Image (cartoon, rainbow, N blue to C red; front, side, top):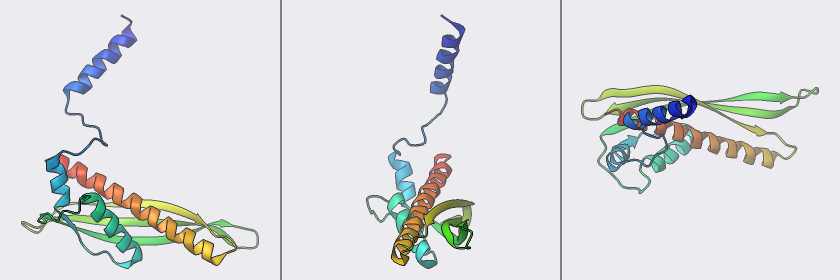
Length: 163
């Protein structure tokens, strides 16, 4: 057997023997129940409402109302950056940058269990039609909220998987 094949074989055995878990594996019921016990607090603004609804759907997909053991507080900061500027100073492209500063609070003792910040960017084009630009901006905000919700869920899953 060649040294490369032997190395690959030994590496695969090493990975199988450790507690390696794929990130996108189906959650076990205990972890899913723990995620469902996270109550998402209200988040200010339209983008905040989008984020709250998407997070609530992700954390409790079967809409079960488990007794809350944790509260997730999120402060959402949204900025719009001008990107594509033509010679006549007309802006043709924008970035929406959303930063979610989150705190996971254990309701049992009202202590912060985990906290962090997540930043996402989403872009849209400005067109001649104001309505088309409005729709593109709304779509961009919704995509940013979806991405933020996924990333927050990943962080919470990683936190709860440690315990």
